[in-house]
Image (cartoon, rainbow over all chains, first blue to last red; front, side):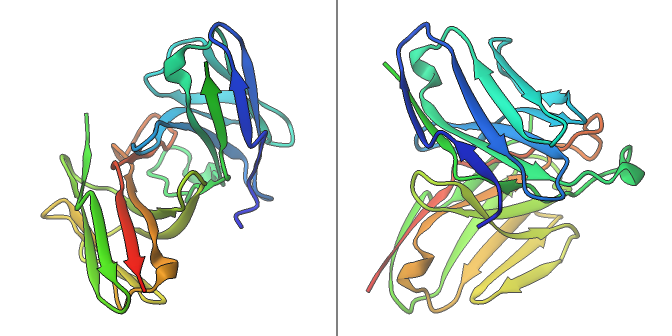
Length: 120
Length: 115
């Protein structure tokens, strides 16, 4: 196990509703990234949080938003759910070393078990 | 934008056989990660390669990075049913991505190992 936990494990919503997914990072990690994995595809980067601020975003609309808390846990919120939002949502935690902030960083990302979201 | 292509898409082998999975990038690789995923579950980190020519091994799994070919290979020796799952390669799309690291992934290689 990686020490990264996610809740809930499964969720069923209807189109137009809003959902909040939660992630607790591994001990000692200060960065959380969220990914969406559609069936049969590789994960796609949604955004990353560092020091409670969004620190990089993929090609996802603004209705995908997030938070990071002082204890480095994180939430992913999705408003106005669409059928295509049905997917496995993965969070990954990593450790950012501020000494190498502006340099190439290679912090390994450790993934949680995911939340399976079904939108009907 | 950078893309990762994995081959084969799926693989069925007999227990005890060796196998190789490839990951080819459309652009220069600056870091290559291999993960394993059981169906519908999270990703398990296997290993990370940084330098051209680098080779790492963990138990019966060996990964190599060929920067010139912009390619990495994952080799499993004497496969076991426990090796079954989806193998995903991930890479950083650029060396300096505004201070944050995101990964792009291939579509995965689905491996089944029959006893």
